[in-house]
Structure formats: C-alpha cells, structure tokens
Amino acid sequence: MATFADWVEGARIRTLPAAAAPVLVGTGAAYALGEGSVVRALLAAGVALALQIGVNYANDYSDGVRGTDDVRTGPPRLTGSGAARPGTVKAAAFASFGVAAVLGLLLCAVAGTWWLLGVGALCVLAAWYYTGGRNPYGYRGLGEVGVFVFFGLVATLGTTWTQALRLSWPAVAGAVGIGLIACALLMVNNIRDIPTDTVTGKRTLAVRLGDTAARRVYVAMIALPVVLALVVALAHPLALLTLAVVPGVVIAARRVLGGAQGRELIVVLRDTGLIELGYGLLLGAGLAL
Image (cartoon, rainbow, N blue to C red; front, top):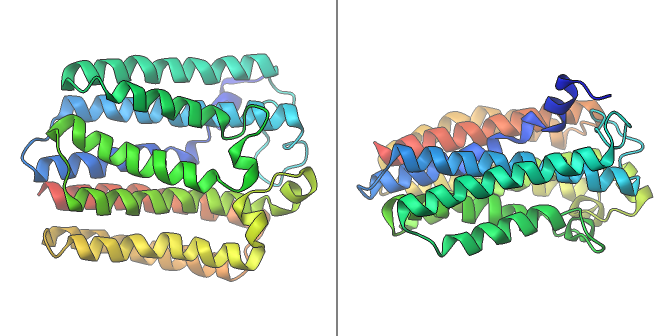
C-alpha cells in the first residue's frame, strides 16, 4: 500500500516549478502594465499546480497500465511499482483536475474572463491525452509541443490576461522562455528514459532525435530563454536580474553534453526545475519593478 511519501513522490515535486514559473512571469508582466493582482495570481498558481500534479498522476497511471514503467532508472512510480492500485492513481489525477477546475472557475469569475473556461477544458484534455487514451500524443514525439503551448504560452499569457485584460510583447517573450525551459524539463527526463522507452515503443522526441541530438536540443531549450530575457531588458532593464540563472544553465548544459546517464540525469532534472523557478521569479520581478 502506498505511503504518504509515495504519493508525494508520485506528484513529482521536481516538476512543480513548471507550474509556478509561468504565473510569476505572467504576474510580473501584468504589474508592468499597471494591473497586477495578488489574489488573481494566487488563484492562477493554484490552477497551474493542480494541473501539474494531475498530469503527473495521469502519466503515472497511463504509463503504468501500459507497462512503460515496468523497468525504470528513475524513482519508482505508484502504478508501475504496484504500490497503488491503478484506479486509485487515476482517481487522484481526476481529483487534481477537479481542484484545478474549481480554482479556474473562481479565477474567471473574479477576472470576468469566462471564455477562458474553454481554454481550461483544453488544458485538462491535453493533460490526460499526453499519455492517456488509445493514441497518446506523448508517445508520438509531441509531448514538448503540448508542454510549450500549455505550460508556457497558455499558463503565462493566461495569467497576464486575467489580471490586465491585455497582453504585451515582454509577456509573450517571457511565455516563450518559460515554455522552452518547461520543454527542457521533459526532454532531460526523456533522455534518461531513451533505453526503456525504445523497448516499450514510446516514441518521445528524445527517442526520435537520438541521444546526441536530444542533448543538444536540451541545451538550446535552456539557453534561448536567457537570450529572450536580454531582449526584454531592452524595455525593462531590471530583467537583467534573470542572468543570475546563467551559472546553473552552464552547469546543466555541461552535464548533459558530457554524457550524464541514469540517476545523474535526475540531478539535472532537479536543477532544470530550479532554473525554471529562478527564471520565473527573476524575470517576473524584473518586469514588475
């Protein structure tokens, strides 16, 4: 029977910065437009975190029942390890989606942006069908596309819109940067799993590219956001604060290009999450101030 610690591990804490970072940047962009709101930012953060936890449990369930997680180099999964029943993990996923839906409803009510409920529904569908359903898009190398769109563009720009009711080009640049780092999180995770994914038929982008090319793409994904921050700094000089993440970017890039494998890549996964959180915090602050 799964313990509380098992469920916390199943929520994949290392990936949660992917939920917080876009809200930080989106809120900073809203403040730059003179329309920031702490209450709406907190509601947006709640939606993003619940969706991230939901998709993590959904992936645990779907990969587990398919047998994709039977052999892993990373932490064991709830379903694949047999620690929890598949139905229980599935229920946890949909409970998380339910929390996201309630918070999203409250956010739309406060902001008066009811049309975003449709976008929220698309987010839930994308979260489930990443590895769920008969033809999951994550198994066709399209996982990064979904992550970029929903955990980059939608999460960041949706946060800005619910506060300012308009967008700006720095918000768009920040959304692209956040989306790329979120993709890097997925990429490094999938680089680690290339051997097992290849055997089980999970054709992630990393599998399709091959190990060497996937590592180079990962580096591009964490380096380009720094360039975008420099562009934003042309209008908001304090966005240069974001350069504080450069040492972390360099270390992560060297480890990946140096051939880190297996559990070594778990460290890179953690560090990439911290890079995204730092990027979101510093770029958001640079925009707000």
